Amino acid sequence: MPTEMQHQAMGYDRAATMFSPDGHLLQVEYAEKTVRLGSASIALACKDGVVIVADKRVRDSLIAPESAHKIFEIDEHIIMSAAGILSDARMLVDEGQMTAQQHRVTYDSPIEPLSIIKHIADKKQMFTQYGGARPFGVAVMIAGVSKGKGHVYTSDVTGNFFAYKANAIGEHDEKIKEELRKDFKEEMSMDEGASFALSIFKKVQEKNFEVDRFEIARVPLATGKLERVSDEDVKKLAK
Image (cartoon, rainbow, N blue to C red; front, side, top):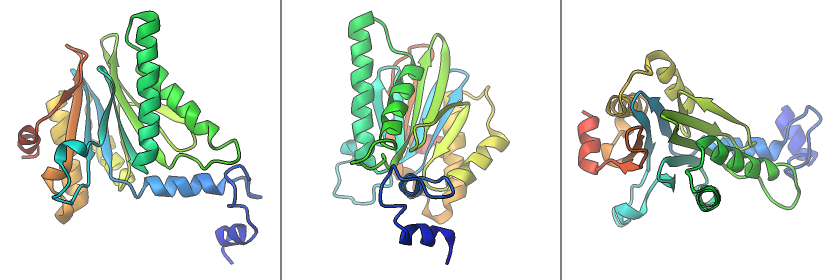
C-alpha cells in the first residue's frame, strides 16, 4: 500500500495539526493541491512599476463582468491575486485592507507591501497550528510599490512567504515559472511585462486560451496608484 494511503488509513489526515510519522501535515498538503486547481496569475516587478495578469476563468455569460475580479485592491499602491478557494482569499483580502487602513489612520502614511504579506502569512500559519479549523486553501501573490521600487511577494498555504522579481501561482505554475526564468528581464516596462505574461498563458493554455478571460492591473512607480487595464487594452497587449 502506498505511504499516503497508509497514512490515510491510520487517520493522520484527520486533523490539520497531526503530523504523520514521516513529518508531514497531510491536511496542509491537500490544501496545496487545491491551490494548483485554481486559475493562474502572474506578477512581475518591472522597471516602471508592478503588474499582475490573472486568469479569471469565468465562462458563464450570465455573470456581470465587473463582479468577477481576480485582482483585488489592498490599498491604492498594493494589489493582490490568489489561487485556490477564492472565498478563503476574500477573508485574507479583508484582513489586508483592514491592516492597510489602520496603518494610514495611525501613521498617516501608506503601509509597506512587506507588512501586508507578513500579516497575511501569519494568519495562514496560525490555521496550520491550532485545532478546530482547516488551513486556508489558497496561495496569495501581492504586488506593490514603496520608496520608488516595485515589490512582489508570494505566500503559500503554510504561511511561508518570499519576495520575487516575477512569479506565478495556480494551475500550470511550474510551466509558467520555467518560462519566466528563461525570458523575464527586469528592464521590461509594465506593458512589455503584461504582453510577456499573456504570451506565456497563450503558450501554456494552447487551444484553451481566451483573451476575454484575463484581467490586468498595475501600479506605476510614477503615481503609486492602482490602474485597471481596460478589456480593449488587454486585447491589444495580447497581440
